[in-house]
Length: 246
Image (cartoon, rainbow, N blue to C red; front, side, top):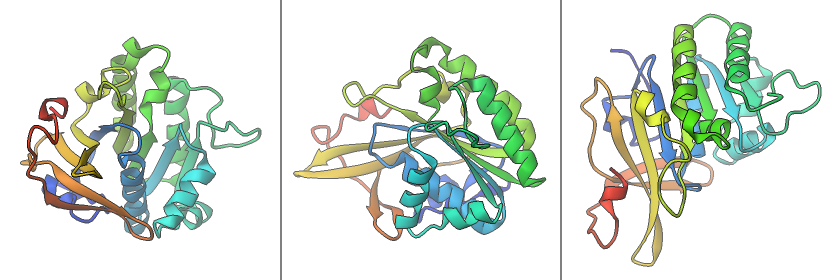
C-alpha cells in the first residue's frame, strides 16, 4: 500500500510509515494543541515530494499560514509563487482574490478545491482543510452530511486529505459530530498540565488498514523546525482522563 509521509519526525512510525494514499484523515483536538502545525508539515512534505498541494484555511488568513510556516523553516510562499501549491483563504474573502471563498458553504469549498486541482494539474494530490468545523458552526447537526459530501466528491480527484476539527476546551468534545465517523483515520491532539508544565500529546485513534500505535505520545514544537513526536507517556489517571481521549 502506498503511504504518504507527513513530514513530522516520529509520527509516521506510529502509522506504518505514513497515511495510505486516498485516505481522508480527521485531525481533531482543542485549540492550541498543534493541529495547524501538523497540517503545515503535511503540506510542506507534499511540496518536497512534488505532490499537488491545496491548503484551505478558514480560521487564519493565507498570510498568517504562510508566516507561521516560515517560522517553522518551511517556505510555502515560494511554493505558491512557483505554482506547486494553492492556499485557499476562506477567512478574509479578499475582493478579486481568485483563491478565496465568498461564503462558508461546503458546495463552494468542493468547487474551489476541484478548480485548484485542475490548475495544479494531474497527479497525486494532498488536501488540507483547516478547519472543517467552520462550515457547520451554526448547524452542527449537518456535520456528518457535509463531511460525507466532501469525501465522496473529492476522493475521485486523487486527494489524500487532512481535515481538522476543533474540540471545545471545556467539554473536550467536537463542535458538531460526523467528521470522525466518515474519516478513514482519526488523529487526536490534546494537552494537559502535568507536573506544573503544559504537555502536548497525540494519539492515533483510528487508521484503517494499518496496525497503528495505540499509545499516547508527547509532542514537541520548536521554532525553526516545527513539530516532533517523542516518547510515549506513562500517564496516571490523575494526570489525564483517558476516557476523554477515547
